[in-house]
Length: 298
Image 1: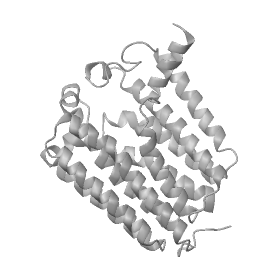
Image 2: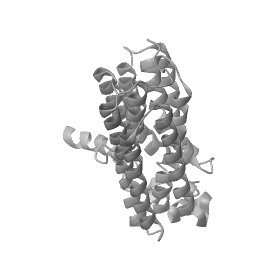
Image 3: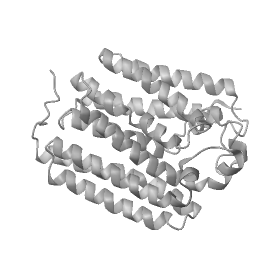
Image 4: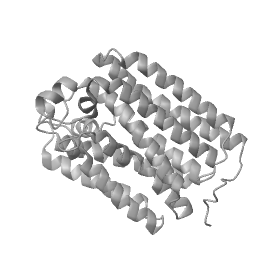
């Protein structure tokens, strides 16, 4: 096997050819950066968090495929992944995950010790999430914590504190993750029943569509409350309205529970996160009012 072929396999193992996971991890991180930075997060910090997002999501994908290496060959959608197909060894995968995690750790060295401590927790969440599908009825909630942990890290990096808003935004992301990853799980429902993996789609059963929409609603409600607390205005509210319209479109896709339509809804959540961030960024641009909660400590 040539070096280029090996690198291509690693790229697929890290899912760099499928960036939706990076985007779903990136948007809440950007929400946190903009709220904590009052609309003006330092450019260097943005780059650190963006690159860290790519590296940690890639490491998480490698660990996920390692954890699921005995299941993936029996699932139609995952049977051709490098580990499942035997194209990459388990030893190679573990070393790749370690290298990616170390690189992400190097990025945060210029930041404060609170960020370092949170980064350790984030690494644990990313590494342990794939195994929760054996035990938790709704592992998507755990995913929401892992995918949203960039939010408290963003506050710690800029304010050296963890105010209530940081945790409220994290809770909003948990509900969002349950919604979009339930849509994802609806694609693999039959395979997951057969191999014994627990997912929210199975736990919610015939109420899965209702659960998705309720989680969407909770996400918007919490974000709206955060916006009010932060003194945000019409641009942010407009972003939430656009996001709600996209969520409504997702209902038309998932109500039939057809596999490909559910998968399309999952992928389309990128635009939910983008709409919310666009509204937030524009609101700070046109209405740069300091946070009423006094989040800055420097």
